[in-house]
Length: 112
Image 1 (cartoon, rainbow, N blue to C red):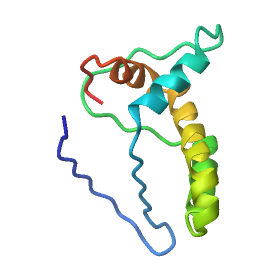
Image 2 (image 1 turned 120 degrees about the vertical axis):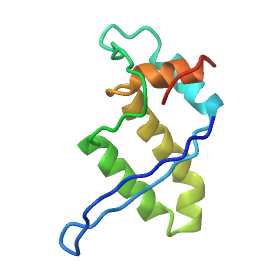
Image 3 (image 1 turned 45 degrees about the horizontal axis):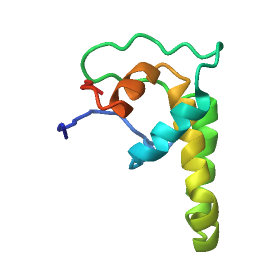
Image 4 (image 1 turned 60 degrees about the vertical axis):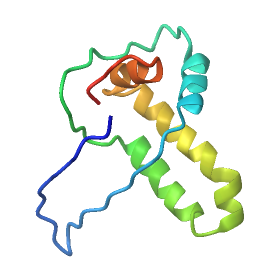
C-alpha cells in the first residue's frame, strides 16, 4: 500500500542531499532470496513496526554510484543495470531491513 512520505533535511552546497528510488521487481527479489537460501551466516534482523530509516552501507553507496554511472550510457544501462540493482537488493536483504523485505516478498503484510 503506498504511503505518503515527508522528511526535512538541512542540505548545503558542501553537504548536499541526494535521493534515489528503485522499483523492486517482486520476482527478482524472490529469486535472490532463493539464491541466498538457508545460508547459516544470514540471520535477518527482527523487523520493527512503522516506517524506519537506516544509514546506507558503503557497499550500497558504491553500487548506487555505479548504477548512476551506467545510466548515462544506454547499452551499459541495459546490460549492467539489472545486475547492479540485484547487487543493491542483496545488500538490503543482508542488512538491517532484511526481515521486512523477506515478509514483503512472501506477500505478508509489512510496515516497510
